[in-house]
Amino acid sequence: MREKKIPLNLNCGLDLIGEVLYGKWKIRLLWFIHEGYRRPSELQRKIPDASRRVLNIQLKELEQHELVSKIIYPVAPPKVEFSLTDFGMTLIPIIAALGNWGDENEERLKNVILKR
Image (cartoon, rainbow, N blue to C red):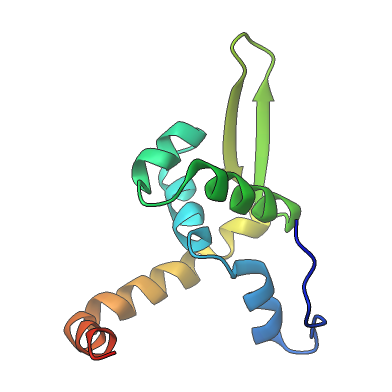
């Protein structure tokens, strides 16, 4: 993992959330794992725009932040599954609320984003 140039500021809840959830695919990964897509290949199919490498990095970070757990089954070939921890499950209502807000404001948000 690369070293950050700007020191961490962990004095505010928003900074803490940003540190844990920063990453283009992390919120989607949490949501899809919650929906039952647990294998890396399933997650890759659900997020085809993300490279396998980036998904693996972000899954590892989610695991380090104790939001997901990784289960490695001792079979050949190796089987890996991810699941939400109890701590990770506490984010699901928040992610659902953000998704609902995005759905309710879809047209306005698209217009604002496309103005750039």
